[in-house]
Length: 397
Image (cartoon, rainbow, N blue to C red; front, side):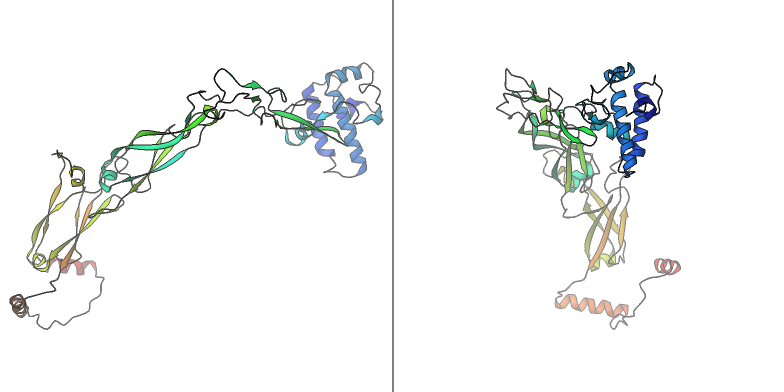
């Protein structure tokens, strides 16, 4: 190699190390065999790489500046015979990494893996009644999760001992593997097999947790279910999940609410729906019904009922109520999860037609039919939909 090394890289003799590295990266991207596979370009790439190997090493650069042989007599034909350079230098040229200097065994490494890591989140299901979901409830739950080992307090070592620095990687968590190629010695970093990349070894693991720093434990927690939750809602309990390896911080615990079915009410969003069945005579003559509210479930079975809760309500049915008629009671539904207002209670009326009549009842009904001219009804078929004016006319007729 007769050409001046500084000229090969296109930098002045007083160039700083960063300037030399940037120049090499630029040239390596242009001359790499994968980009320009011809023989002339490959030879040029070797010369540039050799120049960078010298000028990036302070001792070799000083020897070269004094006019000496930085390769110790290797000459131009000794390419790749001197101390190799790290593979991270080649990767830096293409990806702009922060690898170490030439010849560094661990330059640009990631370092040892931490033994202490955050734990995973946990999920548990909780069955609640409709009233509990609507108005909120506080429950005691039992969870089985990993907790910090009480014997070693999370470090994984037996009492009286402690983790030791790995002698193989000397605490780096990585070891260099060297391969020879046309570029010289290419060094790559791999996790240390002796310490599994942690940089330290536990010579005497804790017998309670086998060195993991955590054990399984069953414990009780109090969870507050807010008012207005629906089926599938998840309540988050921060840092109540699985403790991480090495006694790391715990993840979160999520309580998934499952709402059971109700004998009377069906929930649709914030609204409650129920159906009441009344005899034909009550629907024709009108009546007043006393019906239970959802709040009645909160005091059922308790010795002392909350007098502030309205457990019943009066529903007035006008004379001539038809089957399928709906009555909407505002503000008697489910409270909003955001704490603003409540939904409605929708009561649907079903008129029950008698199926068994004795002689006297049948006689009275026939007499009523005769009085109303309904002995032979025409069974007229009408369209289900009506105009606004048609519905108004029917309402006033």
